[in-house]
Image (cartoon, rainbow, N blue to C red; front, side, top):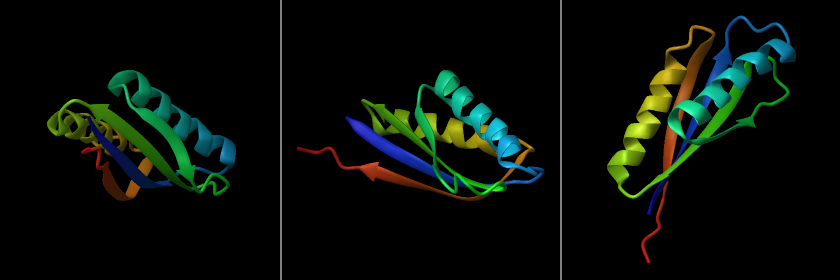
Length: 97
């Protein structure tokens, strides 16, 4: 089993309120879950109206597949003009017995 978490810190460029921010974040999270089959949530900066941290997790039988899925998620987030990506990092879970 291979598990990886992707954290992405975002700046929501045109957000003027928490309501506007949450609309953008909800779209990114829900679409990622459906399109890529990952677990996803807002994990940081929930009460700041132009900043967010999203967390995504993928599990698969091969590390290559996990990498492909998270690469796709990352490209999807980067492709949205509503957000600027400040940073992204990955953390692999060691599941060796």
